[in-house]
Length: 537
Image (cartoon, rainbow, N blue to C red):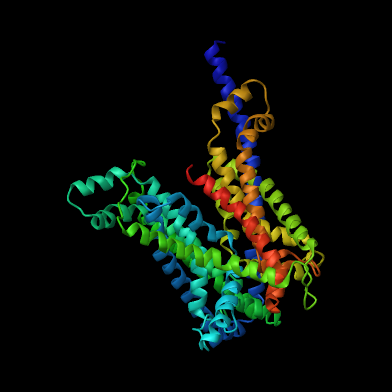
């Protein structure tokens, strides 16, 4: 047998072995996806138990209509406001001679490190009827401030803490845009506004849409901010209905909320599909920066105002609470204990570990097999990320109570909820890392006698390890901030940072929230460091 025939035979043998291993991994990936999709099935089963007449009566009740209207209005106003704020800020930091551009890039992205519910009660403490500003203005004869509660207040707070999604995705789209297209439009007589409208805007619309999708999903699933700002939306109403023993209404509202989520995903998918050809540019050439002239300092002042409201205000309020009460202050029986932080770290670490163990086979087979079942399994893992935490929590409560009572209000069920919600973060970083591994290295390892498992351990795993760790870090840091699923599923007496913050906030002991809230902000800042470190890549 010639050398060429021997190589062909070796390749055929390796291909057959890889097909066998790939089938096993595909089945494993499909099983993982099925488990992660199971909460939707459990919620559907819960709804089918409700008599049709009762279901129709609950769905057409005035309270249900009000909740639907408020939720859609909040999503629409917040999404619009974040686009109007995030896109200009992205243009200023990416395409103009704004002073201290790198500083403003970091500062304008940092509001993501502040959980929106912390920002909400900081704003209430500052601008509420008995807040810091009202106390300061009282000696001047100002007896009443504009109302901070309601839809306008919730829109303001959420906009300030989620606009960085649009800001970051728009910046990424601007950096991927071939600047020579803009320059060509200018040489053909187009002004700056015309060139932006006809060349730049169509090519960054998918980036804007991607950020707007994240904003819409976050707004729809947010529980803490609307509750604090006294706006009846799906998440707060579901939580109240569940605690008020109106489980049927909570289940039906959860299905409605999933329906609205599906509509948002479909709209974003349509926008991205329609603009895919516009988005595909030839690569990023260096762009001539727009000279703002004397307006550059006005622009810098606007950036400082946004950063001041979103960052300086909440941190300043938290520090004020801390210094007013003192480190040893305790009131109303709400003493803070180090155990609460350890509990948060423990369950977050467990969720990160399980997520990584599941993400590696899912991400690996999605890239290496590239079959329809493998891709469907990978896509299915993202359903949990689009599922609001309160809906996921309610589905798992139903599952635990009806099918496995021994799991109800246990740590394994809580960790499972975190994994369902945040596994896509680990899958995304793992998939990106696997794509960068040269397949010839694996073929060489197999030709040298390594088994498929040995080639994976010796070649693939060391190369994808940084991405796996990044995914674990993102899952850990996001889990630390998760509120509704924690409130619904934590074991009795198991206190975490977020559950403690929510408890003392509800009792108006704001000073008690200072230490855990500042701790959460510091931990969240680590996740932002990961995001910013990846931006240039």
